[in-house]
Image: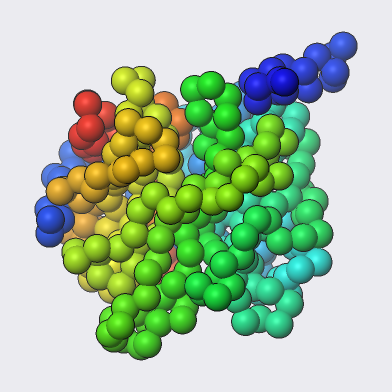
Amino acid sequence: MLSCFSFAAAALLSLFCAPSVAVPLSKRSIAGPVFPNNFPDPSIIEVSAGWVAFATNNGRQHVPYAYSDDFNSWTLADGWDALPEVGAWSNGKNVWAPDVFELDPSHFVMYYTANTLDGSTHCLGAATSADVEGPYTPLPDILGDCHRNQGGAIDPAGFRDSDGSIYLVYKIDGNSIGHGGNCNNAVEPLVPTPIMIQPMECDGITPRGSPTQILDRGEYDGPLVEAPSLIRSSEGIYFLFFSSNCFDGPFYDVSYATATDIMGPYTKSPRALLLPGSGPNLYSPGGADVTPDGKKMVFHADLGTNANTRQMYSAEISINGTTVTI
C-alpha cells in the first residue's frame, strides 16, 4: 500500500513519466494590515512562486486571494474568485474559512465551509485545481460528517504528518444552536464547540474512518473555540492553533495547545499567543493559519473595533519545546 508521500511521488512520475495572558509583540515580527481590504480568516500556502493567501467571502467573491513573493508585500487579486462555483450541496452563501492543501505541485485541494441548500446548516466542502490560485472545481457532495445535530461543521484545515498521512481538522459549530448571548453560546446550558480531526485518504478528499475530538471550549474560552491550524514541530510536538471567545468582541484571541500524539490529548497553553492589545491596532486578532515549518503566521484583526472589516496581518513566530512566541 502506498503512503501518501508515495502517492504524491507517483502522481509526479505520472505527469513527467488558565486565563490567557498576552505575549508581547516585537515591532519587527509582525506586519500589517498588509492591505486595507476586508480579508477575514486568512489561510496561507507557499509554492515555488511565493506565497498565496485565501480568505472568507467578501460579498463579491466566494474565495478572494492575495499573493506575495516575500511574505511582506502583498497584492490582492481584485476581482478573482478562486472558487467561482460551490458544490451542488450548497446554496453558495456564507463561504467561510477556505484552506488550500498541496498534494503535489500540480494537484491542490481547497477545503471550505458553506451553507447547505436549505440554509439551515454549515457543512464542509472540497474542490480541486491544478493551479494554486484556481479556479477550483467543487466536489458535488458534502465532505465528511456535517454533524447536523450538533450545529454543523466549519473552519477546515489540512495537515500532512511526517509519515505522509493526511488529516483534516475542523470545528463543530455548536454555538450555532446555542441559547443566546455572546456568539449565541453564553446562556446556560452552553453547547460544546469541539475541534475534530479526520484522517483522510491520500487523495485529500476521501475521509478515512471516523473523526475524533481533540479539543473543546473550557472555562477561559468564552462561548467557543474555532479556527484550528495544525502543525508538527521539528521536535515531534503537535501544535494546534485556535481562536477562542467571540470573533466580534474584545476578547477574541489566538492560542494553541500541544500534544505528543496527533490524536491527543492536547494541553492548552496557559498563555495566549495574541490578544487584543498585544500590538498596535490589534483588536480581536484571530482566525490564524501557521505554515508547516512553524515559522510564519497570518491572522486577521478588526479595522478599529468593527468586525465588518477584518484585515490580514502577517507575523514571524518561533517554537521552542512546547512554547510559541512572536
